[in-house]
Image (cartoon, rainbow, N blue to C red):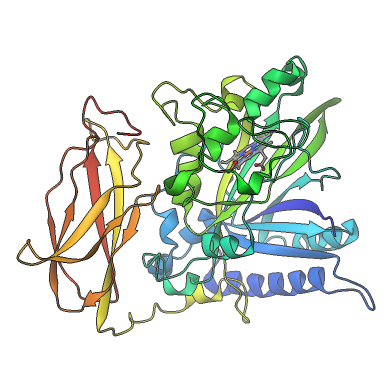
Length: 439
Ligand code: HEM
C-alpha cells in the first residue's frame, strides 16, 4: 500500500503542569488509536509514529535525569530548527483520517497553541523530484531494527524508559529545479553518482544491483563529491554507520510559484549516526579526502535546507506516549560483569570539535599492571563508539589507545568497573598537519 505523508508539529502552551501534559498525552493516544483503527471490514487507512521534540524535555526539571542523552549535546543542523513539543509522522491513504486527527488536536486548544503540517507524496515511480531513483540502498528489516532501536547494551547512556525508542531527524530540503533542468544528463549522473536509467552506481555496468555494491575502487568514478559517495561511502568501516531513510518528495505552491523538494526523515538509534552522514561526510569538504568539496547537491546550489529538527520517538507505553519519562529512573541492575564503552571525539589544535574521522581507532584493555592485555582490541565505528567484552565488576583496568598518525597521543585511562556498563570518553586532538581522514 503506497501512503501519503504528513509531518505534524504540535506546540503546547508554555507553563503547563505535569498533570495537564499527561492528560493531553492520554488524549493524544486516543486520537492516534482512532487514526489507526481500520474501518469495519477494511484495511488500516493511516498510522503514525509519535515523537517528542527537545522543547518537551525542557518542561519538567524534576525529570531531567530521564532526558534522552542524544539531546544533551545537540548536533549541527543546516537550517532553522523547529521548536515543537510533538512530532507525528503520519502515513495515510485516506486524507479524511488525517483531517480527523488534525481537528481533534486543534480542539485541544488552549493546551495546544500551534500546529504546523508538512506534506509529502508517495512516489509512483520511485523517483525523487530531480527524477533519480531514490531509496535504492536503504536498510533491510534486520539492519533496520539494529540501526534504529535504542538498546541499553550498546547505548547505556540513554535512560532506561527510552529502551526500544529511536531518534528521528527531519530536514525540509527545497530542490532547485531550474538549475537542475539546465544540466546535461552526464553531469546529473555525476552529481548523484548513479545511472539515471536504473540507479546502478556509475562504477558498475547498468543493471548492477545496488544491494550488491562493494567499496568504491575507482578513484574518481563516481566523483568524490557525488551524493552517493558522500552519503554512502561504503567499505567495512563506513558501512557500520546506518540510518533508515523515510524521505518523501513534496510539491507546494507559494505565491503562485511551485516549489519542489524532499521531506527528509531518517530514523536512527543515535543522533551521532545522523551527524556522521550529514556533517562528517556530506557537508565536510575534506571527506572522503582533503579538498573533495561539499556534497555535489549542495556545492552546485541544487538544494536549499529550509527546516530542520531532531525528535525522540518514544517506545510504546500502554498508559500514554512517553509515560515512562515521568517514572523514577530505576536503580541500575546488579551485575557481576561490566562492559566498557568508548565514546571518542576529536578536536582541532584550538580544542574546537572537528568532523575528523573517529572510526577505526584501536583500543586495548589491560590489567592494572598495564602489561597484560585483556581480550582482543576494540575498534571504534564512524561515530566513535567501541565496546570491550565484559570484565568482572570490581576489576581495575587500563584503557589504552593505539597510536595513530592523525591524533596526538592520549594518556591511558584507569577505570574501576563498578556496574554493567561503564562509559569512557576519549577526546583526541588532531595533529596540526594530519589529514582529517585516512592515514
Ligand atoms: C533533496 C536532497 C536529496 C536528494 C535529491 C537525494 C537523493 C538521493 C538519491 C537519488 C540517492 C541514490 C539512490 C539511493 O541509494 O537510494 C540517495 C542516496 C542516499 N542519500 Fe540522499 N538525497 C538528498 C538528501 C539526503 C540527505 C540530507 C541525506 C542524509 C543526511 C541523504 C542520505 C542518503 C544516503 C545515506 C543514501 C544512500 C547512499 C548509498 O549508500 O549508496 N540524502 N539520495
